[in-house]
Image (cartoon, rainbow, N blue to C red):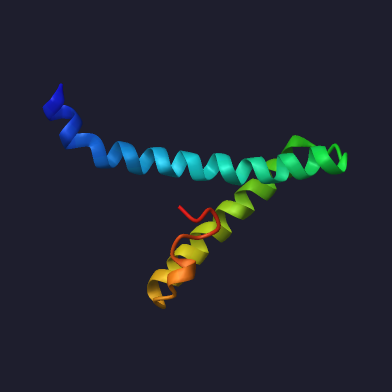
Length: 78
């Protein structure tokens, strides 16, 4: 079991970080919707989350290609 863990630790950590990023991005539109009392349909909240995920990935790729340290971590900063 220890050998399996050592061989798969990085992929598991990477996948977990990606899931955590998505959760953080999903909470933002949900919290704004609830605090502002907008009662937006779930489809709109999902669309906003997808847009934030795209922006996060874009900032990350742009930061890496142009060596802009502040943008490499994207919106979520981890």
